[in-house]
Image: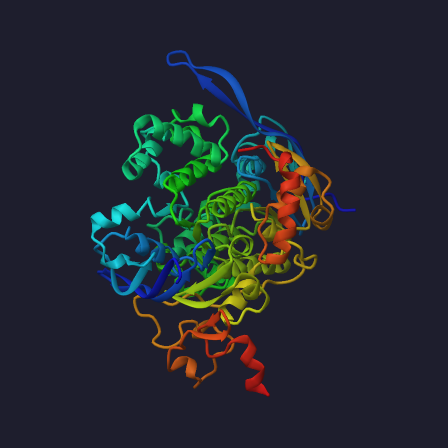
Length: 285
Length: 333
C-alpha cells in the first residue's frame, strides 16, 4: 500500500499567555491544538469540522508551517516539515497551498488579477515573464474565468469570481496538497455550489489532495472522504465520512449534527427533539 | 387584518452610479403571533425591506419612493421621525446579525436595557433595573442579575445575541424583526438562539419577521416563507407547502443547490449550481428578473418581454413566474 501523502502525529500548538507591564512573563498557555493526529492519502479529502475556536484553522496553519507547532510531527511526501528550514522549506511549500475564506480580503486590491496569479510563480523564480503570462491565462481558464481578465483588478469581480482567482493563484505552483479554509463560507448558496463543483473537478482532473475546513457540515459531507471532528484542540472523532455522518460515535458529534438546520420542515421537527436531548453534550455558551 | 402589511414598497438608493432599485415592489403580510421567514441571497433587498419598515436607512442616498407599510392599522410611512421613535423599540423590536450594532460598548448592559425601559415604559430606575434582570434571565443568561453590571465585551457571541434579544423584547413589542440573527454564530449556538426566539414568540404572542439567507433556518422557524430575488418577492407560501411543492424556478434551484446533510451520495455527485448571477439593480431587466438564469425561459418567450405578475396558484401560495412547476407539464402536454 502507498504511504499517506500527509501524516500528522500528536501535533500541538500552544500559545503563551503573557502578563505584566514591565517584566513580561508567561502565566499560562492556550492549547489551541493539543495532540492532533491524522493521515491523508493522495487524491483524497479530509474534512475538518468543529465550532469556532476548536482549532481547525490552527491545525491547518501548523501543517503548512505558517505557524510552527510546539511539538509533534508533520510528514508530507516523506519529508518532516517541522524540521525543514530556509530554502528546503520554501521548495516544499510549492507543493502545499491554501485557499482562504474571504475572497475580498485575500486579494491585494492594487494588483491586477494577472499579477496576483503570477506572483507565486515569480516568487519561486519559475518561468520567464512571457511564459508566466501564458500560465496565468491557462490558470484562469482552468478555474472557469476568461483569460483576458488578467488585466483587471479584484474590485471588478463578484465574490464567487474572486474565490476562483484565489484558487487559480493557489494552483500555479502545481501543488499536491491544498488546504481549503472555509472556502465557501462567505458566498451565497447559488455561488457556493459553483465553487464546490470547481473544487471537485480540479481534484479529479489534477489528482489534488484537500484538507477541507468548514463549519457547514452539509458542505463538508459533499466534499470529504474522511472526517475529523475537533473540539477544544483535540480530535474527538474521526473516520470515513459515511460512518461519522450515519453512526456518530460520540455525543459531541451527534449534537453537532443535530444542530445543523436542514431545508425540510418535517426532518427539522425530528432533529429538534434530538437536539434538545443532546443539549448537555455541548457547553452552554 | 394582518399586523404588518406592506404593499408595493419601493426603496431606491440614489447614488452616483445611478438609481439602485434595492426594493422594487415588495408586498407581504405578517399575521399577529406568527413568523414570516424572508429568505434570499445577498443584495436581494431583504434587509433593506426590514430597515424600510423601521425607517433606519440613511436618507440620502436611500428613499422610500412609493408603497405603504401598515402596522397595527397605522401607516408608518406617514409618521414623523418623532412619532416613529415611539414605535421603534416599543411596538416593533429589532435584532441584528451583529449584536454589537445594537449595543454600546462603553455602557454596561444593565444601563442600556434600563434606558430602553425608562424611555418607553416610564418605569422608575429601581423597577427598570429589576425588570432588566428578569429579562436577562428570560433569555437564558446565567446569573442574570449579577451580569447587569458587565460590559458587552464580557459576553460570548451567543450570549451577546441573547442580550440583544432581551433589549429588543424589553417593551413587549407586538412584532420582532430579526435580521440574520444567527448568521454570525456557530450552528450549535444558532440552534439555541432560534429555539429561544421561538419560545419567546409563543409565550408573548409576538409576531416575527425572520430575515435569513439560510433555507434551513426558515424551515425550522417560520410559519410562512417569502423568497426574495433582485428586489422582489418571487414566491410566498406556508412553510411546509413551499418546501414540498416549490413553484418558482429560483426557489427550486436554490433548494437543489444546497448540499444535503443526509445524502450518502453527496461526495460522488456534483451540486446543481445556478449559472450566472443576479442582475444589476441599477438597471434591472424590464421583464422577468430571473430569466437570464432560468432553465425554463425560452427565446422569444414572454419571459423577456413582460414582467410576470405575482399570482396566487393555490390558496396562500403566490408565485411570480410564467413557468411555475405545476404548470410546466401542461405546456408540454
